[in-house]
Length: 257
Image (cartoon, rainbow, N blue to C red; front, top):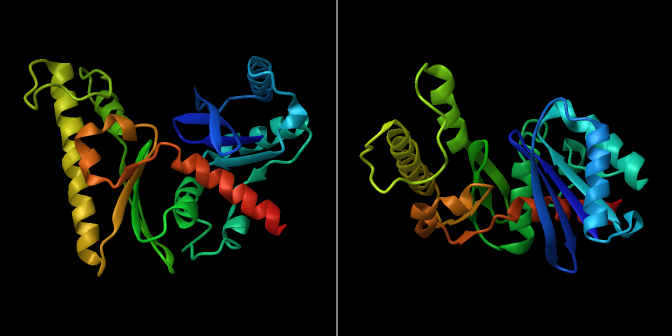
């Protein structure tokens, strides 16, 4: 049994993996003031609900891009499960079997995506991650990560409109029937959602133009499954790609160690 935690800027994803399958996945809001009491209760509910003894969890791997909660995640795991989690870090990245430019700057989630592709999807790939940020990681077989392109995520853009204006509301992440909005909420959805379709397609086109060979495109991230108008631009939509990468990096590090 493997326990994987992916702590991003918007959500913390908790997942259980066993025998090649993801048994369970849950998300909670990321909060800088999240504490060990909450996490201990969360782990208790999780294990009781699935009738899993704590000692059955043999590996715990964590990716965290929110420095404010890194220590509480580490401590909560140690105090509850009695084991130190494998925490993705630049020291681990430098020992992975492919090139990672600037390992002290790149996000752990992006490295996890690339490592999952490295092991599971041979070839050249552009990995598009629909999260708090919209990221494009360019992975070249035999070379590793060649670079990353970053734009604000869909939810981030919607929230920014509300924060920076006095009358625009926060709207749900969904495509309206028409690109011509008939009210304020639909107008924002039309502009942001269909605008992101164009943004993603244009960046994929520009990245492909700079490469000498064809790259397949893989989508992941919490919002990837909602971007239906873009699915024809991707070879695959894999919402579990980051979790797989975190898990596989944990396995690799444990084996090498």
